[in-house]
Length: 134
Image (cartoon, rainbow, N blue to C red; front, side):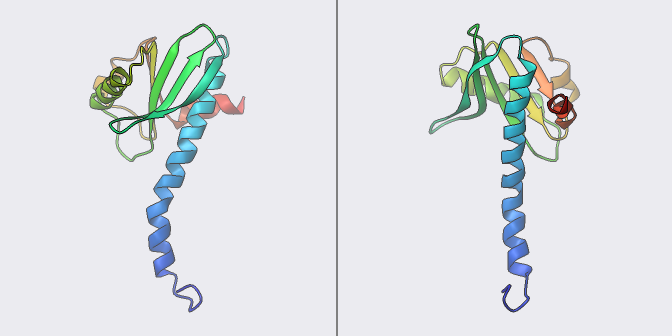
């Protein structure tokens, strides 16, 4: 189609892949952010977890042995409490004893989820990535 200057098919295919590209970059920035944020207890191991039943976008272990697990959601709606419940269930099913849960959201969080924020639950948006520029 491009050869005949018909770009419709290209744009359709690109739109389908564009979300995947954005999500990948968002996950990578989230990992770098966590590394910088926890510089007082550096990350020793970093990665993702998945099996047939579950997927966890971010799993890390600090030098002191703390386990951090989180998900990154590059979607156009606010993240609700059920996302935290799903993350906790996935971690339990994977046998992870998590010390700190982190959730990254492109468009923020519901009031109910924000009210649960604590030392063991941290919530971040793209505005948080300003730390990476410092």
